[in-house]
Length: 144
Image (tube, rainbow, N blue to C red; front, side, top):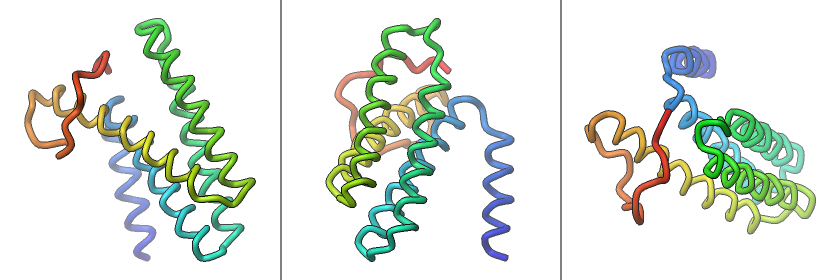
């Protein structure tokens, strides 16, 4: 029952989200899956770990596919490269049943989410605090 309420909430959040919010939801989903994979790895739950990593990989693939190379070719290219690297870390973690690649992928995606949170804060006219961490310089583009 609780899961159904969460699914309904998530569906409503996705349906009401603008493109910037959707990207943030995808990052959170990938990070949640990586966190779950790390937990399953510690507990020796091979199948659950693999499912969580596969979900994170699918989300990162979707993030890469959603890039608009026409509006910002250099940024899109750099993100595609970074997403490819994250994919390779996730694959390595799954094959080797190893935590360090998961930790690195989690750190990279968390940093990217911070940048998107900064863009959302900027887009909202500076209202609210997206992140306590300060970013070194502004992102290349916060266009949605």
